Length: 215
Image (tube, rainbow, N blue to C red; front, top):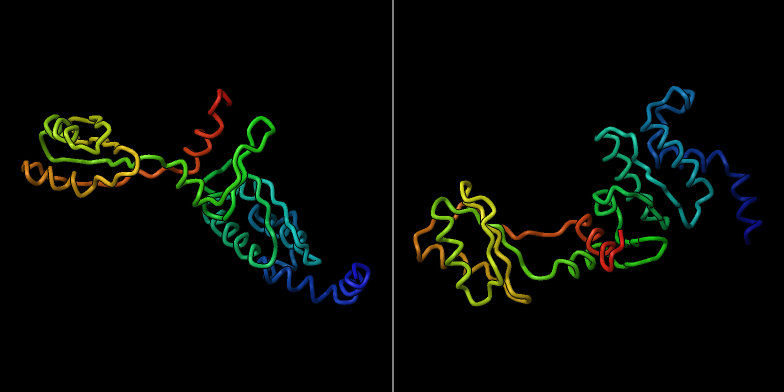
C-alpha cells in the first residue's frame, strides 16, 4: 500500500504540487526565486513542501516568528485550514497563538508533560473562583466595604481608588454578579463597568509550571 502511494505521488506529482500551491496560496509567486520572496511567502513555501504527499502528521515549530501582524493572521488561518485534513502539531512559546489555532494543548515543564487537555477545559479548570472587576463612579472605599459584606464574597481589593476600580473574588462555586449590582444600586453607587476576569493561557501556563517550585 505504501509503495502504491509513492508510485501514485510520482505519477501525479504535477497535480499534487499544484494542489499544495493552491492550498498555501503561493500560486501567484510560482515564477519567482524563493530567496526573493517575503518572509511570509517563504513560510508558505515551507508549508507547501510539508504537505506534499498528504502526510497524516505535520509538525510546525514557531511558524510565525519574524512575521508582521498581517502575515501572522494569514499563517494562522492557513494552519487551521491544514488542520481539517492533517494532524498538525504546533510548538510555540507564543501562547496567544496556541489559543487561536489549537484545540488541544500539551504543556511541558522541565522535560515532563504536566498538562494535556483541550484549550477550553484547561482554562475552565484553572479559572477557579469567579473574579469580577468593578468600576464605580464614586465612593470606592464605601463600595469595597459593602461588597465584603456579601455572603458569597471571599474578598474585595481596591485596585485604584481614584479610578473607582475594585477586584471582587467570590467564594468557590458562586456567581455574585447579580448581588453585586443590586447592592450598588440600593446604595446609590453608580456602576460604570462590571466584567468577569478570565484567565489567559499564559496565566494557566504560569500556574501549572510554577506549582511545586517549577520554573
